[in-house]
Amino acid sequence: MGQFDRPSRGELETVFGSNGVAGQRGEAAFKGLLRNARLPYQYWHSLDLPRTAQHQHPTKADLDFAMANGRRLALVDVKAWAGGFLRFSVPGLNMVAEVPTSGRRPANRATPLKLSASMSMARDRYREALPGIEIMAMVIFVRANGSPPPGNVSLLIWPGRIRSYKTGLGLTKIEDFLGSPEPIDPSLSLMLDRLKRKT
Image (cartoon, rainbow, N blue to C red; front, side, top):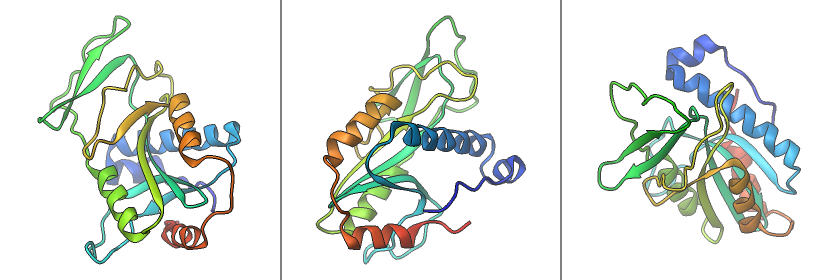
């Protein structure tokens, strides 16, 4: 599955801005949580999205984590947003509303946070590329460095009705979905190995 390779802060900020740095920290934190949780599933980190008959064009979007068991696949997008806010999606507006908690000031944003459709796209592409494999997608929020823990994210629903979870509940949902350990379908592990991003 490869090591967790770490581009420099400058490289990340050049390509993704400060969100790239926060995103990488979040992925590193989640990888550590997976090791500590000792879940009995194989996982892959940083995957391309598959090309399919309906989606031949490449995309810059990637998948943070995939976890597999038998003929089931859990897709995970990791977020490391600053804590201290209750966040929820605003139906029909494709945006995130933020309410400060614990005496925090409202976030001073030039533009509101938008809801990305990348996880919905990832789920759809993997479903098309892997017929017969049961696939679940979710967004898991981890604690950012030095920040309060994330507030309630259960009301934050992404395009395609992708649900959001804090770390503990997200890992429980993954365990409930993947079930008791069993050999991974060979076609599934072969595709995930092939889609692992080269570093």
